[in-house]
Image (cartoon, rainbow, N blue to C red; front, side, top):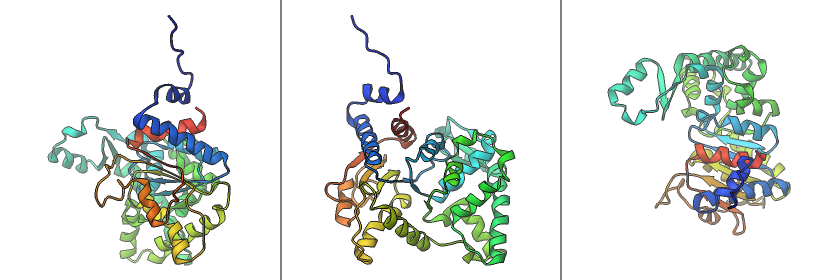
Length: 328
């Protein structure tokens, strides 16, 4: 009796076992991502949720290094939490039984300065305050010189200065922000103000220690995104859109196409590929749970745009898809 040969790679495992339902959608989306790149199209990755704390950087950083991601739109939390993990990983506390926590248990975590993200607690002193000290000097220097930068540019400056190197607690190749800084990757961070560093910046501005205009705004991010889209969309099959989760990280960048076409009358191409990993169920009035076809009516996607939706946990699915694209 013949035995099935064991897969030799992650990609072979997926092709062997992932044949139906969300598993098949994952393989289809990975093949579509690969085909888009082979057709010469750049790819934007939109990242919501807490994917940096989920250590997506282990695979995403390699995607960036190998030129398989050309821009990122992410929440302020994902921007900063990759660096928090970079310098304070050994102080993180994992709580596998987080579903059993009582309100009193949660309060004890707060008293210990442990901020919980599902099963993982970010240590305030070792992570947040360490980065605050580093970035505050950049903010203050720019404010004094009347210079203005985007949130990600300030963090790029901190990383490129090398001042944090002695504090690294994970292999630097596992940090997607380090990989992005090395390539000077375009990053767009809508709604940065609600992040931890955004709150800290606002507090320092309220204290008149920093000019609030030192930080470039979300409108300016949209203006930068429009420039990038105009320069990159003529390439190959156009720009692809790979979305992890929902919310502003995805809604902000995808709107650049109708803005350019309908408000600036530029006649640019639609997004050339679309995939969303989401566990939001399709429901009335839900943006995160809206099926891709709904985006056609808003002028974001075309009728023939390759479209994929994987209804699953992104912390499981995204590393698998990236592994496939990387040929692992």
